[in-house]
Image 1 (spheres, rainbow, N blue to C red):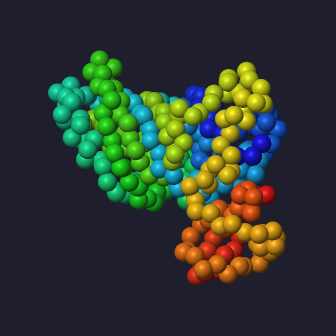
Image 2: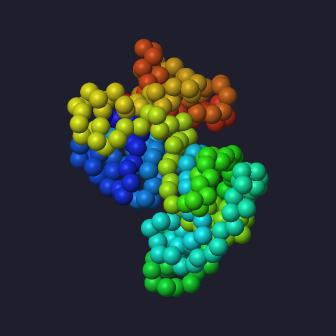
Image 3: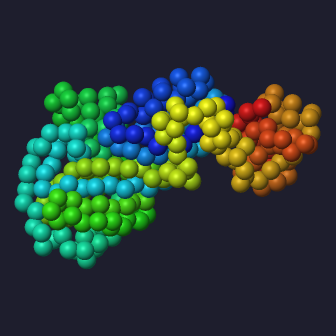
Length: 290
């Protein structure tokens, strides 16, 4: 049972809760490549068994989220989990479609973003939320992120909410994005809901729920696991004979006059062995699975 399992994380579960539950069901080593807040739902790729070796190939994936901003109130955590620390009038004239579309469009592109104080980013070896809970001040370093696309889903003037979909780079905090959008509307706001619908090539349509896993057998689970060979299927292939494979497994570098890059390593029977990397016509092992 080795590979990647895409889980649709339910609300109120931490990513660690999901890992622990799947680990108990599958009885193999389980890891994940990036957390979702407890209040958030959606795509959570889990690495099973030897699939835990794939972590470095997954951490830089772009993501797509659907979020809801609640306008007129600001919380200390910038989401619905926190306590309200500020209230401000919402001018309904600003909630017209064209104005909001223009504001959303203004967020597209590369930019510097300041992560929220209630986050797990470390500064001087200490997580930001630990500073926040201790009431300590700390300078939060900005990080460069990119918004590739952002589109309006719905405006609800009665509830004073805006729903939108955003395609963004790794490291983007949607809570901060919601706060910035609210500011451009001359008010305050917090992230009321968040659903991650895509991580890299992993779409929510492929995801299973914890209820599905509990209600079905091992055959169902295996059907939904993305195997390691399948994950690398678009990489170019190097075919090696038995002796060359043994040498590569032993750490020996092989002469191969081919372009630099990552390659699938397959044996003479076209069976997947692992991943190798070629640099200056030298092939060395990168990730050997079998």
